[in-house]
Length: 113
Length: 114
Image (cartoon, rainbow over all chains, first blue to last red; front, side):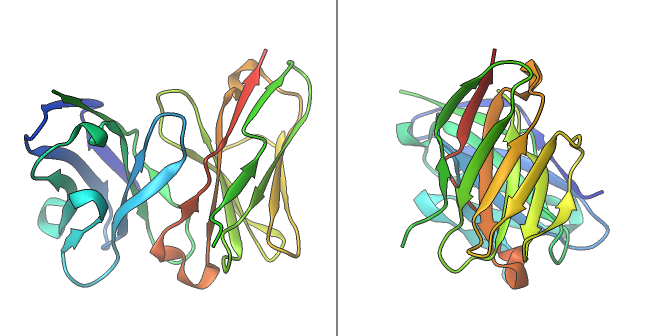
């Protein structure tokens, strides 16, 4: 079954530092990949998605992710962390068609002033 | 343009009781999926409804059931509640023909079973 693995349940960075959240997928065919963010006591908001085409995907709030087939990875990055980026981040995958969206366990991002 | 709306936002129930959660999808969407998110965990897929039929189901017992109405809104029912059913229940909507575009999520219903 299609799945994603998020490395690191908690990542802490200083304000202004690079943010790197890791996600690897398991698939024999290129999947459809997503990053969602969840702020405390809220639902999930789509940050960005990779479906087809360009492998470097730009999302909201300055985040981007690069699909690397050779590494089966879809890591999320942001050049400069802001305090408002503190949240839970989930990598998710859809295999094909209308198979359900499957989530990783999440990475909690803390930003230190 | 309203997004996905869920009601109620919070709910407290006693073990053994039954609960119904409601979801209205984003305008233009025809598919509703339900997820359970336990504290500190990622969302787990419960089931998906399209054309008023359950199309796919995750690894949840029959105590979890659902319904989709002609206007695409949906309900999630849980019978014989257990303490372990305490979680945030998320509803997500999508368009069936473009499911790979991702889902739009509501803010969730926080269910506490005591």
